[in-house]
Length: 175
Length: 315
Image (tube, rainbow over all chains, first blue to last red; front, top):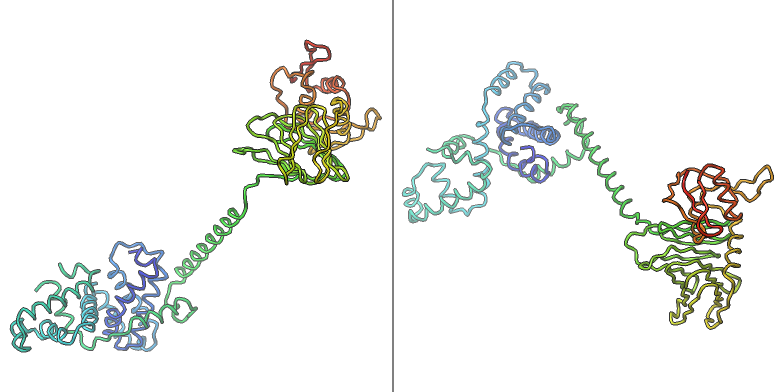
């Protein structure tokens, strides 16, 4: 973990991988994209400035998630807008203490899927969306799009391969 | 459903997922890293920030020290030669191999200080005159360059005197070979007691003879004004001897042995005390010098087998 943050290039890769998942996760609580951006930025700033003092055995994801949670609590406490609403503050803090690291997983996957989808051809994108998001079977998609089942199968397999490549740093997702 | 599908199912619930340009976000963040944005840094632990800065400063400091040390080390070549200068006084230089060079006043000479793995003992007499008592070493010739001349020896005593319009070579002991640097075929070989004068561009001047003993006496006289390195010339206040100087005892013994090989022997290897000095007049005869050294408690003297021969041993 320590090594992942020492080198600026490695740190940049982690920043780019986790920026959108963390931003959306924080925004689901703050409901303010600018404030959420600030919290995420401060999260990475803390990680970078403390990278030489990091001595944890957890994963990059757990560490980042923990720092993000603490940064958001700090932010809420210091921000006047939120400090007026003490009840809301307490609620968010209590919720936060109960949140496990896995809570960030859907955000990571969503981010990866959107990234992969953006690179797919429209036809392939449509096939994958019909299967994963609309819940259609391969046969239903084949009939709907007037293509063979094999074509659907190949397309989805290829897209999943891209997605796995995108998520190669999260092998636990595929347990 | 496997774990992956379950997470995908959960991700479907994430409505309004915002996708920001991460490259742009990174650029903004990079600027922040390089700026002193105190508002943002408010959230950080001050101690950690300080530690971070100190660690960074230390890193740079160490890097700078290493670079400076490295550059100094690289740019500083190993010293292979030294240059000796004399003004109104003479000087004596003892080389690592035991060769003794008497550098006369107003002279300049470059000599080797490292003798490891050298093929030649190269000396350059850049200015003035000098006498050389060369330690014998067949494997490493002793070469003296004086203007356009090259004098090569193995082990001998000779003198090179720069005159107004020529250079005088006097060979006192052994054999020396003189050649012209610009024309190496021009060579002269000088035997004991022979003198050769080199005029610029003229190399066919005949060699003349001189009694080598006379030459030795002259050189001994030259030493009257010679000051050994680090010696302090002290004039006697009691009028006993106005030519006495303070010399290291080690240098005095080496000097006497060099110049009195036939008359003087050391009983066992003389172990001198490095910093011990003696006030003595080296222009006196050998017996007088030895007696003075014995009186001063530096050596013991015994008579040798031949007449006027002595065996000395440390006290």
